[in-house]
Length: 186
Image (cartoon, rainbow, N blue to C red; front, side, top):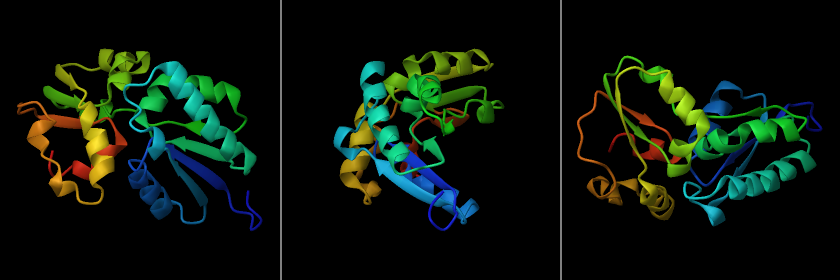
């Protein structure tokens, strides 16, 4: 808690993607104090190994621990699917993760999942996928995260045809917080 008695929550993402989650958290829980860490210098995270992701995450969560946060939200799907269980064991505060919303897309027969390669390769994603019926196409538009970071806030400059497969699915799961910025274009 801070000096004013407010619960403090750290929000961690690989870059600007988690700002959308931060905004929603602030809207729903205005009495909490939030700290945001976007690791733009090391983004994108999608091609990094689990060891790299753990090292980067430990550095940030250590920073949050040093300032006395009461909980941490991993706004990064990649960090969540690769590291959340390890981080929960290492830190005394709750570590809450985000993951691709496959359950929310249960009614879609033909589903496109856009996520980073690391997310799609994770055991957590494989578990979520096993629970799902229907046809799923998984696609990792790795250069899209970098394009979002580079073009913010002028997202209309990003040519979506250069980043997405030519499909017509029933639904799309945005398995990376960065992709929310392009929702209307996707």
